[in-house]
Amino acid sequence: MKITGVSTAALRGNFEWILVRVATDEGVIGLGECYWGAGVETVVRRLAPVVMGEDPHNVDWLYQKMVRGMSGAGSTGGTVVAAISGIELALWDIKGQALGTPIYNLLGGRYREGIRVYADCGHGREATPAAWAERARNAVDLGFTAIKFDIDNIAPERFADPHHVGAGRRAGWLSGQQRPLSNAEIDLIVSLVGAVREVIGPHIDLALDCHWNYNTRDAIQLARELAPLRLMWLEDPTPPDNVEALKRVTDASPVPICTGENHYTRHGLRPLITTQAVDVVQPDIPKVGGLLEAKKIADLADIYYLPVAAHNVCSPVGTLAACHVCAGMRNFAVLEFHAQDVDWWDDLVLGDRPLIRDGYVTLPDAPGLGLTLNEDVARAHLADGATLFE
Ligand code: MG
Image (cartoon, rainbow, N blue to C red; front, top):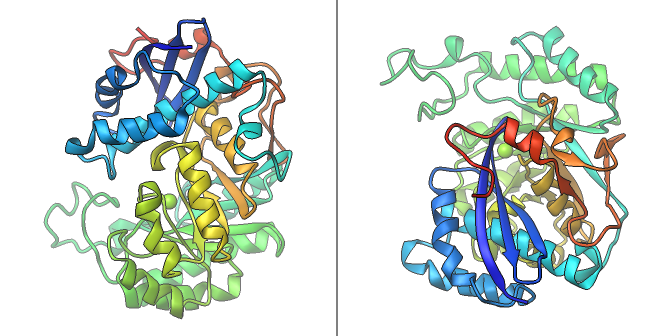
C-alpha cells in the first residue's frame, strides 16, 4: 500500500476544525484532524511529498520522517507539530481499516470501552452566581459527571488595569496583561465557583482553567482560597514557559495542578513529568504529535504515577481519534469536550449518535477510526474560502 494524496478541509466550528484526508493506491482513505492555528494547512501541504509513495503502515517511522523533514521550520512545537499530528491520525485510520480492526487494538488494546468526557462550560452568561450555576446545571442535566469553567478574565471591566496599553480595546485574555489578582477578584471567583459547586453537589468533578494568566504567588493564593471547593484540578495557573516556576505552584498548591495543552511532543512534556511540576498531565492529542506520541507521553507519566486528562477542542473526528488512544492509557482520567454549544457537532459524522451519552464516548468496533464523515454537513460549514479535500 502506498500513500497517493494528502488534502485538508477547514470547517467553521467553535474553533477552526482542520480535517486531513490521506488517500492510498488501494482505495483506503484515512481521516485525521489537526489542532487549529494559522498556517497549519500550509504545513500539511508541505508535508505531503514527505509521505507520498510511502507505506502508511509504518506510522512511527513516518512520524519521524515528517519531524526530520520539517526540522528547519521548527518541528519541536507549534503549527508544524499540529500538522504532523493530523496526518498521523489519518495514518492510523488507514492502518486500522487495512487490518480490519479498530485503532485502539493497534495501540496496546483497551483498558476501557467507554471514554469519560468532561464538558467545558467557559463562563456563565454573566458574572453572577446564578448565571454560573445555571450553566453548570445545564451541563449536568446533559449527563456530564465532570465539568470545567474558565475563571480568568471574568470581569475585565472591573479588574483589568485601565491604564495598560491596549486596555479597552482588548480587555480579554489576549491583552497580554499579567495583572496581579486582587482580593476583590479572588472573592468574585470564589463566589461564582462556589455557586457552581452548590448546584452540582459534592460528587460532580469540577475543574477550573486559568489560561496562563497569573504570577506564581497569586496562583498559590488562589489555589488555597479555592481548596474548600474540592476541585478536580486548577489548569494552567502560570504561563507555559517556565517549568520550575510552575513546580513552585504545584508544590505549594492544595489543589491538583494540570498543564500540558501548550507543550509539544514527549520532549516538551518530559520536564513537566520528570520533575513532577504537575499533578495532572494534559496533552492535546491532535497537537502534541498524534496518537502514538500521546501514548508514549501517557506511559512516561504513568511511571511517575501521574494521570492524563487530554485537552480537546476538536470536531468528532479528532475527538474520536483521541478516544482510541485514551482507551489504551492505563493512567487515563478524562477527555475534554468543548463543543456543548455547537448544535451540529454530532451531525458531522454518520452512524450511531449521539457520540456522547451520559458523559461517555462509546468506542465503535468498526475498523480504523470507526466513523464516516457526513460530507454534506462538512460542506455546509466550510471556513471562508475553504474546499472539501481538494
Ligand atoms: Mg485550557
